[in-house]
Length: 442
Image (cartoon, rainbow, N blue to C red; front, top):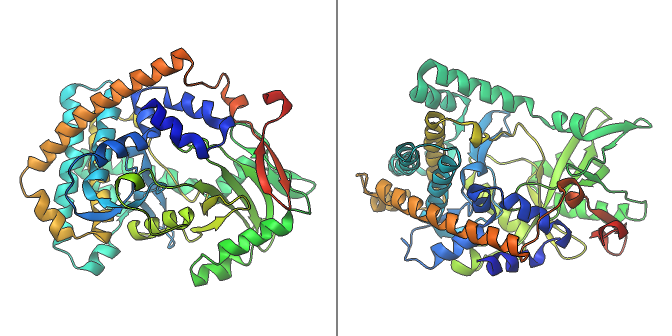
């Protein structure tokens, strides 16, 4: 298992790997977040239903959340598609239910509470898929979980108080706009906005005039991947600044740039995230992707699966042959801190995630066939509960093995997160932007 995860790190920035290891080593749940490859291999070795959908590929509970739809409504949906690929629907359900088991264990809930939470996720998926099996294709495509639906879920879970919690949550998301990111991440220097150099949050990259044509060319390449009307919109923005931002747990080690763009004037700003995309962890265990460009694979899967997607969702291939996908950094995005949830709220969240995953699968799969496979009894719910409990035990064993590898020195940790996340970059017209080691890091 340790060797398997190490093999996955070949394509990542070596300098950032100790930070990845540190974030994975906090507890079994953080380890689970960073070891999607291990679970993909385990699921791939088992018999499967043969009922194909566009998988999220990493459908753990932290990869769901709120964000703004193009019409500015706040909706709840899956928000991470780095591992998306067609495959058996139950792969995502197994990933989701196990994540709730681990989260409940990490929060110190009782075994009964954990069982109820995990079973609720599976039951919600099954019941929701039965509903989608009765709907027409257009009705499925138009279905989304907006603030009114969230309020209804909250009321069903906890009455008036639950509805109020849902309203407050949406209000929090609405405050997390592009400008909230701009205010937090940029400063005015000689009247010009630029990123603040504040590792580990953000490392600003100095880009000389010689590199601007290369970056402009990449942005033109990206513009061509946008839907027609969005091409016109993006063409009104110009590049102002660029930086690198370390994100997540499983994604640490992959390059993740942020670019600041200006429209009509200095008050018309946009921040995009440019995130490296590599082959899905599912590919060795399902089928090869139809997309040679991994950023395109991510974008295609996201557009198929989400009820509404970021208007700036697109992809590029960098100067070094690396693939990236691009989206807005922050557009009313919010996900819960699951460590703060009590058993009741985590169970309500499990039901919302189960419903959302079923809707995502119904967009690309055969809802009637999947619903028939799941049946009308609790047999599927209990089977997924049994799997999740058993697999959470396996994760605990793997986590112990991982911590032993850390103790032996086989896996290295970051001594200091700030120092570990601070990359130096070079930028030239021939090679683009590259992460380098500085003398202080050698």
